[in-house]
Image (cartoon, rainbow, N blue to C red; front, side, top):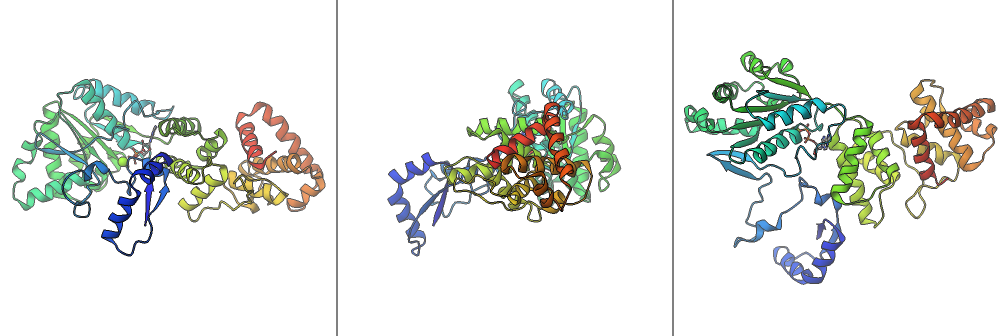
Length: 432
Ligand code: ADP
Ligand code: MG
C-alpha cells in the first residue's frame, strides 16, 4: 500500500509516530497488505487534488471506511446551498496582466458596490483562464466589504440539480422565493443551461426577482451571451444587460508572474529558466500552467532535486500524449549535458516545441529560422564544431550559412531580450 504525503516533513512525522498503527489499520482493512510505503507527492498540497483527504473529517466516531468524503464542501446560506469559497481564489491572488485589467476592474467595482454598477457581471472565456477564480474572488471580496451580505456561489449544474429536485417534489413555486433574500448570486458556467428549458425558466424568474431588487448577479460562461445558442433569447438578453467582459489568456510576462507567485505560495524555488520554459510552452490555459509546475515540483521533490527543463518536458509530454516533444540524454544529475550535436538539436527542438526535422529542414519561416540559427550557434559554442560540420548536421547546409547564423544570433542577443533569454536558458541546460 502506498500513501501519498505532501512533503518530507509529513513523511518523517508519520514514520516516527504512526507507522505501526497505520500498518495495523491497513492490515485490518486488507490483510493482504504486506507493507505501507510513503511517497512524497508535492501535488497533494494542491487544494483541489482529487486524491487529497482532509484528516479533520475523520475525527468523529464513524470509521473512515464508512464515511463518504464530500469532495466539494458546501454551506447553507439562508436556506440556499452555496459551495464554499476556495480561500486561494481571492482578487488579490489574481494576476491580471495587461489582458485582464478590464475584467479585474469590473470585479473590483462590483465587489465595492454590489448590485449597483454592473448588473449582471458576465465573464466569459476559454477553460482554465481564471473565470472561477475571479467569480469566487468577487464573492469573497463582497463578504469582506459587507460581512452581513448573503453571497451564494454555485455551478450551473448545482442550480440545475436543485431545480430537478424541486420539480420532483413539485415545489418549484417556492424557488424564486428561496433566493429572494440572497444579496449576491454567482453562477458559474451558465453555458450548461443550454437546452434545459425548465432550468432556464426557473433561472429567468430568479434572475428577474434578484435584478429587480438590485441584488448583484455574477455569471460566467465559455462564450459571450450572443453565442449561447442553446439558451432562450430572453435569458441571453438578460445576460447581456450589464457588463460583459472576456477573460483572456495572459501573455508570456504575465504567465511568468503567475508562475512566480505560485512558487511563492508553495514555497518552492525553481530556476528562472525552467519557469520560462513552462511559460513559453504552455500557452493555452493557466490551469495547465499551474498543473505542469505542480507536477514538475512534485516529481523533483521525490528525487530530492529541483525541476529541470527535462523534467518539465516530461510532465508536458505526459499531458499532451501527441506532443512532439522529444527525449533527450541526461547525465546522472538529471541535467542535460550535450555530448554531440544531436543532443543539442534535440534540446532546442524540445525547448521550442518543434520536431528535429523542423529544425534541420528547409522551412524558412521566422518561427523555425530563429530556433535553427540559435541551434547552430549553440552547437558552435558548446562543442566547438567547425561551421562545415555543423552545416552537415543541418541537411548539408553550406558553411557560410552557419557562419551567418552564428553571427546573426550574437548580434540579435544584444537587442532582443527574448532571444537572449532563450539562448541563456538553453546554454544553462546544455551545460555551456
Ligand atoms: P476557469 O474557471 O476559467 O476554467 P479557473 O478559474 O479554474 O479557470 O482557473 C484555473 C487555475 O488557474 C486556478 O487555479 C486559478 O487560480 C489559476 N489562475 C488563472 N488565471 C490566473 C491569474 N491571472 N492569476 C493567478 N492565478 C490564475
Ligand atoms: Mg471554471
